[in-house]
Length: 102
Image 1 (cartoon, rainbow, N blue to C red):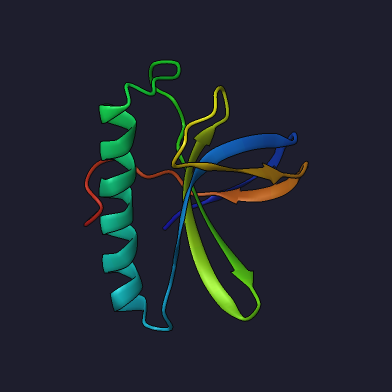
Image 2 (cartoon, one colour):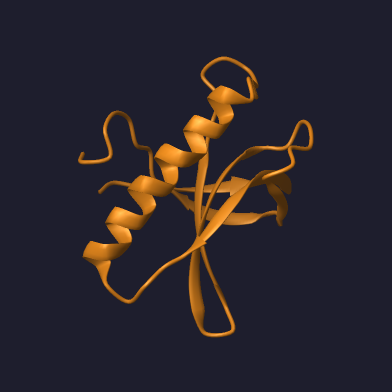
């Protein structure tokens, strides 16, 4: 998968996290289901941002465990979501369009 390095300013995101396993195949299933749930919550809550908005998928490690967070730019609080501050820095950006299978 192609990527590009980009410099990002600090951004605050809001979203939800899920714990991952050590299996890439199982993590694919977990992340796919997680995105379906996340998108469903956004839709049912009518949580809209700008049209053609950017969504973020982040992986991180806490106490030896890996987690995945689906997130959007913060513009209001939502009861099922928590915030995460992403510091200014150089990041790899992967762009995905279409179904998760692709």
